Figure 1 (cartoon, helix red, strand yellow):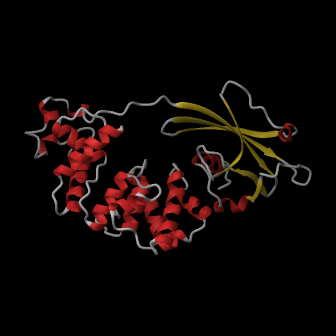
Figure 2 (cartoon, rainbow, N blue to C red; figure 1 turned 180 degrees about the horizontal axis):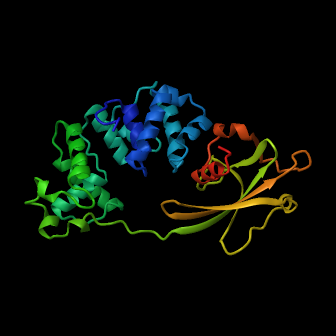
Figure 3 (tube, rainbow, N blue to C red; figure 1 turned 45 degrees about the vertical axis):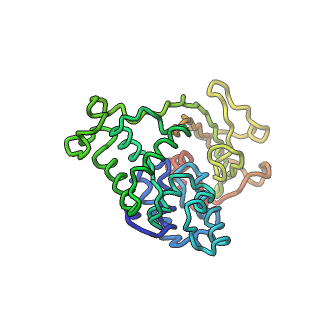
Length: 324
C-alpha cells in the first residue's frame, strides 16, 4: 500500500478519507491519482470543486469529497497549510472522526492514541471474548479504552500498525490462521471454538428500493443535464432529468416531456450500502431551437462530458451508449 509507513499527515489523511467505505484495492488508484494531481494540501485547497468531484467519481459517498475540500481550505487558511499536530485540533476538522484523528496523530506525530479499526476490533474481541458490538457509542468507547490500555507508552505508531496488520494477515474475518497465532493459547474465541462469532456483527438494515426514471434529452451535439442539489445521494453530481417512483406507478411527466418521443429505453441496477437503485433510461431526441426547457437544465456538448462528475450508474449508461 503506497501510504503505508509514511509520516506526511496530508497523505495519511487523504488515504484514510478515501478508504472510508472503500476496499483497499479500489482506493489505491484514487489515492495515487489524488497525490499526483494534488501533491500537497495547498494544491487541493485551490482546486475547483468540479475538478475534485470528477477525480473522486466512482468512489461514492460524495460527502467525503465535500469535506475533503472544506478541510483542505481550512488548513490552508487557518493553519497556513500545516496540518495541525494535536489530536483535538485534528478531530475538530470537518469529516474527521475519532479513528482518522487517531491515525493521523499516531502515524504522523507518534502521539499516544490508539487507532481502532475493524481489524483491531476483531483481534481484541476474539482474544478477550468480548461480546460487545463496535457499532454503538458504548461499544466504541469500550474498545477504544481497551486498545489504549494495551498500547505501549512509546512507539504508538509501530504498535498501531502492527495490530492492524495482525488482524488483516493472521486474525482474518474468515479462515483465520489460528495455528500461526502467538495468542492461540489465551484466545477465548478459539477456546470456545467460536472464532467466527467474533466480533459481534452489526445488525443489517433492510434495503430501500428506489426507481429512478431518467430522460436523456439530447440534440445532435448536446446533452441536457441537471445538477442535483437536494440532500440525497449524488448531491452536486450531474444526471439526466430524473423522476422517482415506487416502481409500481408510471412517472408523472412534466408538461415539457409530454410532447417528446422516446427513441430508446434501457435499465440498470446498482446497490449501495442500504439502497437498491433501479435506473430506467429513456433517450429522447429534441430540436433545441424549438424546444423550450426549464432554466435548470445545463447544455453540455457530448464531447465535453469528461469535464463533469456523474454517479456511477450514469457513467455505466454513458459507456453503454458510447457517450464516454
